[in-house]
Image (tube, rainbow over all chains, first blue to last red; front, side, top):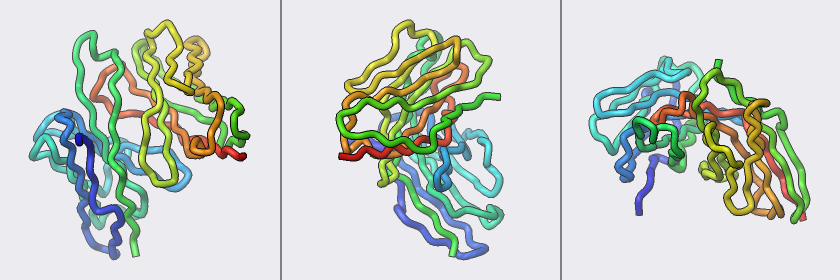
Amino acid sequence: DGGITQSPKYLFRKEGQNVTLSCEQNLNHDAMYWYRQDPGQGLRLIYYSQIVNDFQKGDIAEGYSVSREKKESFPLTVTSAQKNPTAFYLCASSTILHGTAAHSYNEQFFGPGTRLTVL
Amino acid sequence: AQKITQTQPGMFVQEKEAVTLDCTYDTSDQSYGLFWYKQPSSGEMIFLIYQGSYDEQNATEGRYSLNFQKARKSANLVISASQLGDSAMYFCAMRPRGQAGTALIFGKGTTLSVSS
């Protein structure tokens, strides 16, 4: 079955540690995204990538890093520089359409999420 | 600035009743897409419905319909015949510039509670 997997489901981090959240998709999507969700809040964009070996910062990129070495994978590292990392992290992917098709429906598919807690 | 506003933190409805969840958006783009997602307590994001800014008709998907009023910049979600399983958080989101492969901008969400 095609879809997006995220691991682990729950992650605990000690102060000063870097941790990496995994995101894999087998939908053959070009674009991948990382969002952060705080309790009772909407999703905020951390990073996104439209092609292998290229990615762009979102609204809250400070304290995070990403890589896109393979089309299927877009891991997110939460560094010790992120002062308040406790949150729910969602990975998503989508196709990229061009020209007039770019205005068409184009759903973002989401993974099940990783809940990160700082101890 | 591009923005999505959902003014209802929580909504309560009884089974079989219809409910409208409000969403207004702010953009200067002529081409954009509007999405509604459902997030149950498990955390997964479930796509419900999409409306493109050039679509002349309101989108419908089963019990979900989108009341799209472009001049007022509103895209309200209407759920008909509510079910207990509809209890969840609902997010309105916008894809700016009409470009697929662009990240979504989300509102803060509305928590819907359906009672029997």
